[in-house]
Image (cartoon, rainbow, N blue to C red):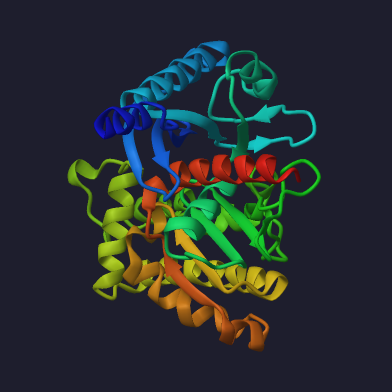
Length: 338
């Protein structure tokens, strides 16, 4: 009798609560299933189709249905979905702008998603996802005043103040690539902003190619050809490590712009921690270690003393963790009636 009761009790247990996370990048889409504790239970990754537009939307739907099925396989139920895009998600209109995806300029993504996604949906920018991920399960765990500064091909920041994400009027807060750091205006700033033009991974690549092309005797390249960007960055970084003067000047120029940009963020937001991620910091000896001291020259002294600079602990996974976190936060908000 007791066994029958026990068996009946087991069969009526509630499914385990899980959420899905979909990180839409410029070239790849990563998706994952998470439990409440932040443990990934299933992961997958696909390439973004070049057609863009609604074809990418169909990829998202396919991944959503896959996550639902994977949750059921594990005795769970998908209670929410967090999704991020590489750009801007207008919180009022639901329109997105993702320059790396064809046809996603003022694209009504949220409207389309709600037609088929039958659970709470959180749609956020990748900047927001980065800072949510790192503050949840990364290098800023349990911190409330956090900035995630992504320095890759471009520059952007996710900003958390007193536990709340700062979005701005149209989700443009954090477009720090447009920080004005040089009084001598360069026409190139009109396209990317000063900070991004001078200190991003893309800036390092452009400047490295220009330096090698201008000084072929100092940086010999096979067959006297113009190097590609990855090769040029490697050549210049290695030369800077050896103390080659021209290479050192280039690297120090980027260090100085990074220091000014980080100092402005420290002085403006007084964060507990700034997490640094992106391709540029794959050379931490050249760009992270010097930055930890150089920014102090420019920053508000009290704020500079209280902030920590850390490398990302989650790396490329930060966004997918952040998507999961956004889903759990939305579910908690709905359950509390706020």
